[in-house]
Image (tube, rainbow, N blue to C red; front, side, top):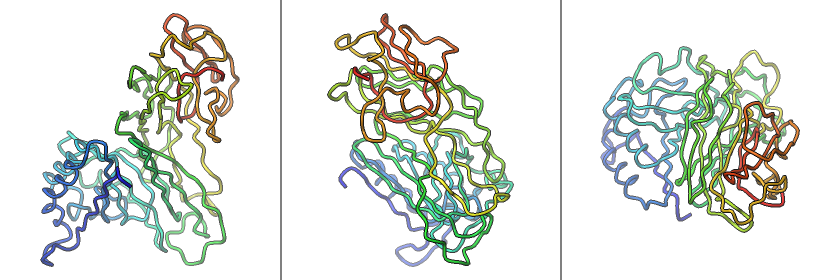
Amino acid sequence: MKNLRIIMLDQFRRPDGSGSTNTNIVDQLDWIEERVMGRPEDMHCLVFAHKNLIGQNHVDTLFGSNPGENPEAYDRFIRIMDEGQVPYVIGGHDHVHHRSIITSPDGSSQVEQLIAGSNSHKFYVPKNPSNDQRYGGPSEVVLAQELWTITHYMVTVDGPRLYIDFYSMSTGQDYDNSSLAVTPPESDWYWREQWGYSLNGEAFLVDQGEAYTEVVDEFEGTTASIIAGVNTSTKVDYAGRPMSKEINTGWQSAGKGDNTARLFLWGTATNLQLNDPALEGTWPRNNETDESDPFVLRLSGGPAKGFNASGSYGLATLDADGTWVNAVQTNFGGTARFVRGAYKPGYELGTYGVDPRTKDVWAAINHGGVFAARRGI
């Protein structure tokens, strides 16, 4: 793998055998900065550590016995991650699947944290109130949470794009048990969520109740924008904190048959939430889907060549078989309807169109994926 650098941090032992597990990383910040900032521009970087920036059950962190300690070290570390385009700091320690955006104590930098779920007999319960609320220090915006499942992660590196698929299975006990005392039954792994980013893309944090219209990005003459849609989620984590969405864009140059560059869109799906101890039986029971709030995606900047203002030209997406289809064809519900003209408020899910004046294509959809303007859809 030639375009991924993995940095694994050892906070438990200095080379000379001395030190505290709560301060060792402070001494490594110069080395961490050199390894992050010194890599080639087209190389991804993932940082792994046992302890977290902010834990959900354990109070001790990568930088101290609680999140309020060593704020200057937190500030520098998160700044290195942010300026160095490190998408994810990945840890364990808590045995829960938990994704969140961590903001430095000084409020100037951010990085996404993944706490990986359990692969042992232990399943910890998050604190309520949460540790960021109890101790101060860095702040946290929750994106996803799943408790009390056995977990597996698959990381895919695809040029400038990197994405992670999360799978889990039942413990074999009622959902609210916090330890594994029996062998789980034979069971399939269930796909739970995918998230990703691209070195040539952008990230947009959309809180509950906010519009998706802040999502605008450009690449090689193509502009992608979400021109309608609202985050209607009301999901919360175990501590009662509302979950936000981080929408990420990525790009690939136009290929054969494309009339625009190809847009990759992650993070629109409904937040993963499996954290209610009142549930009975074994969970999960099904694969999740990529279904999202309805929103309108527009691609602009395609050349006049190949453009036609008919229902056979428009916003296309890759389906599960890797075939280009009309983007509304892979919607969850809705009825396909073609409009010759610009989008207007009130158009329902499944409506799609082309604007003869601007050559823009748009569609009312409820899923992420890969998109381009194409003929023959």
